[in-house]
Image (cartoon, rainbow, N blue to C red; front, side, top):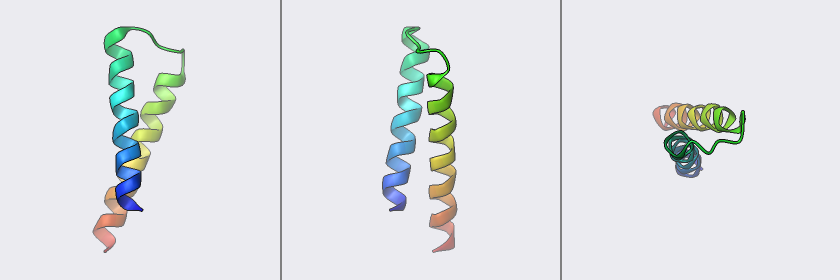
Length: 51
């Protein structure tokens, strides 16, 4: 489960970076994707440390 959260978080961060590079953003969606990605990566790291 933790690996899945990490992968989803990383994919969202990569998509956010692609949105910044190509300048084709969908308004606030890019920032929402960034926040969700960062939250998922942090959750994954916290769960990994507890094990």
